[in-house]
Image (cartoon, rainbow, N blue to C red; front, side, top):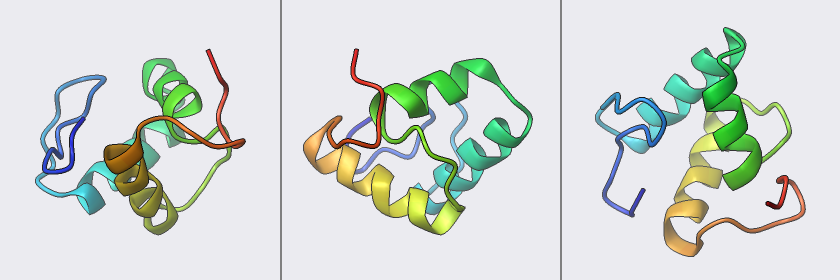
Length: 74
């Protein structure tokens, strides 16, 4: 995922915006989709967050890559 990208790195869905991508991830996590949950855990956060907060975290990830204590380092 890069700065201008809003394509899901897990399934290729293209919701059209970072906000849409965050909503997609939240919906997939709510459905317990393991691939999406694992990607979030390893790259963004291991904590359940609302779409608004996830949008901020996804933008940070796009700019700086995986970082922070809130993720599972692999």
